[in-house]
Image (cartoon, rainbow, N blue to C red; front, top):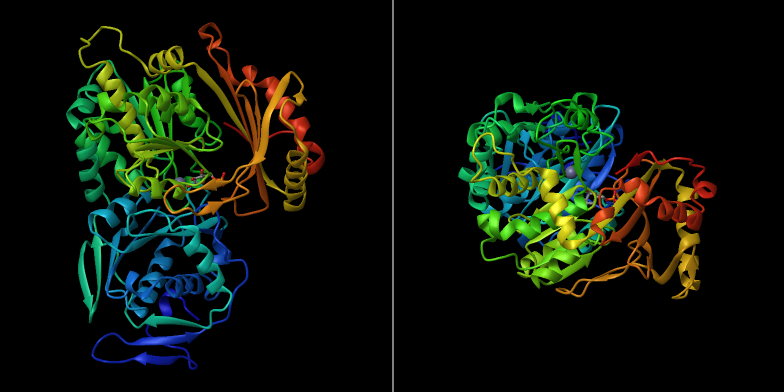
Length: 579
Ligand code: G6P
Ligand code: ZN
């Protein structure tokens, strides 16, 4: 049985595979464990599930069994995570199995800390073969909650489905775990330790990432905004991984006030919070921005630092608008894009606001399934610079993950650029001014998402089958209330770079006025099924742009509920989250 502390004693039935003056490698017998299939991003389960004998070890070994040996033998892998409960033990298990499988070097963030985008950055900068991210992203942490593991490849991108499918296959036939007899590594001290031909290097979690941010952005420009007395900034790290990054970046490098960082200490249970930056789970921050005399700019990031939420004073920037606005302003405000972005992309359920920017800037544009992994190939092929998802993910080809702090710095750059000549006392261009100007230029894509979390899987699956059946019979021109159907389908994506096909990526009803209703089951939950309904409507008329999204979208929302018979299938009266 592979537990973190059993490294030096091997069980009676285990076999010694190699025992030179080098590290000793032992083969520990194991049996397949059901249910180790990865979802939208990695394997996510309750901590208690991962704590079962060999549960994590099996998956890690299955991963090594799935990779071509040249992808890891004597190579280097990065290891880090969001600081959640069980990461410390998990790190020791992963290090021993990596060494047992012939990995030459593990680069691990101090105390096991590295945000998801930072892992991607470190893999790229240090030319590592890949890396592990110990995180269940925005899911709560602690002994009763979630844990997760993701594997990223050598350009820093999440492993493709071809690899994760192989891993799953191998979890079903696994019979041994190769484990190296190395002691637990002290992760709190930066430095290099050698165990024969195997090396562990504990690295500072921030420095490679900060260096990259300094390359991408004009730090002097952002500093000119953050040091103004008439601009107030607040960042909520939600007691998650960006707590480790916020002070060194926003305060020490960019001159923000120390008290502008809230919940800035990463905790194993995120302070009992649900580290998902949206209107429901980052309510404290929302209340501050919507309160009396609130700050001018607010932002938050999730458990592992890849998601973001951007707020202005009494204003919420919907993620679909956020990526469009970043794209529209990138060339002027962000040095990394000084020659203009190469191309733009969004996930299918994300609103069409970005499409309009791509059309105006005459840029290549791509619509991919939900999941950041679908952007990686386009970036590697030089076709894509800026992309985003409605699920609070925004990023660019500076790494191969979405990047919460990057998004905050992008927005600060835009606001700073627009205000760089403003004298103290002059009215500043605000977050809401920037968004409203954008709508005036491009039109507004009203967007909302309804989530029904932890539904019974059976009802949710039946609803999806019902919808699939419905679209197979649908015809263009059919009337749905006051909307006429253009087409309805189950989204299929063919990757233009490698030709791989992803099917069944979401049922969509697209109407002749461009409105859409989309249904998907989440691939990131750890219990039951989460139904997501995405609703979008385009409004070119500026005089109607100030309407609340929930009011503007009410007819479409009602239509979505009746078309899907959601109440009948799931028994749910109300969504658990609205974004
Ligand atoms: C993660 C992925 C995203 C995805 C999101 C929602 O954050 O990295 O790419 O959009 O989950 O996925 P879900 O399957 O739960 O809708
Ligand atoms: Zn995340």
